[in-house]
Image (cartoon, rainbow, N blue to C red; front, top):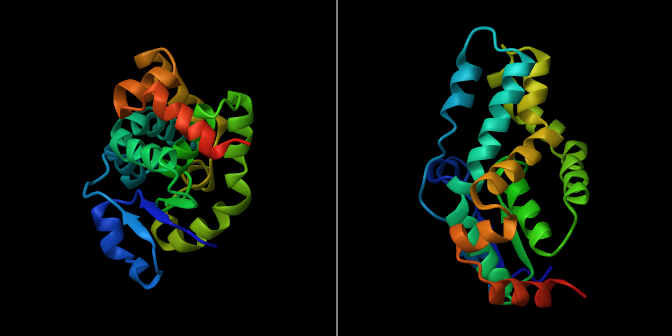
Length: 198
């Protein structure tokens, strides 16, 4: 596929638990950072006795409001590499829907894609990710009600909209967020668009 860069958004412990030997791929640059997630509310909810689907969806929306700020450094690295022409580039997290979903939404937004189209693209994740994640986490989630599992393993338009709303509340726009939190200047945006748009 001619991949040049892997941006691995997983935590230190996630990478240690499921290591990938990217060194076997020639001429591939690998980037990751050492950190741990702060999903305490979600973990607490899933560890409680009787969480409801509504509580799980609310907890996921809270996670999505926090991720753009928690992951800003990683997203900034991703943007800089793309703007510098380091593509094809792959970015990943563990589930491929939350940290990765927001990264994809930010890139699409920076390229001028309308928010509704971004939401539609994000919802396509439900077609590919849910079954894979459900089988991988079945034992850990067996005690939870199906609607709770659906809320945590699936994606929902309200989740990605919560991320956009948090960004806009803090910075007024995605473009202002990119500059303030990630150092993505107008020049970087222009280079990104030149690299990725026809």
